[in-house]
Image (cartoon, rainbow, N blue to C red):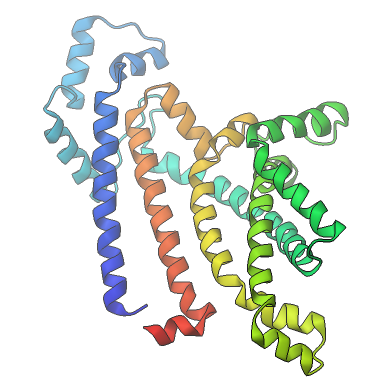
Length: 312
């Protein structure tokens, strides 16, 4: 990726972030519910209407929408996302404290998924239309059909309730507490990635260079791991970037099921308590992380596929 292309991508990220921030602020502005009333309810205080009106004026909630948005965006550019209504802490501190647990869970589930999907996908491609292929394809069909929350509940029922091997609540980020959430997230992803690996490997196995290598007597395992697999990485890297962004912003259901202290659980709590500053900060931060990851994926193409460098 050239410097000019990188500059264009960074400009696109800035424009998209401004658009996302505006839409997020607009939706929270139009959402039903009174954040001031919710804020007082979280503290157990029942103030009078005069006190609530005064609080709204102090917080600037009675000002015009565009004035509120411009003020909020200005503070965001200064790394001030406001203070959580319900938790009474700076939004940036809350997001920062929950990012690492979610990142650990996401990386663990991705590693587990790759350990399962790459061997299964290659086996399914090498033994196409055999019982091995049918078995792997049956697993992928099952994986994409079962929702994550149901997989999590089944795992809790079996490993926590019946066998009592693992804790039901994953309130900390220890290895033992992360096993079931990571397996739950990896299950559906493994099915999708196994299909992708199978398709990519089958396409490479039909290339002329594979036929030539076999004719020269090159061992099959060398062809698979030294030639076919590296050439199949490009679509896999694209999917990994998308999955990483999705995991950082979309693990809410699994985190709630296991009471895992991550970003998703924090976002659900913010939505149920009408904590608008926390919701706005969460959406903006996740959008930034998602776009940065996609940019890094595009940059990585230059190192994985030399043809990308030559085309530029």
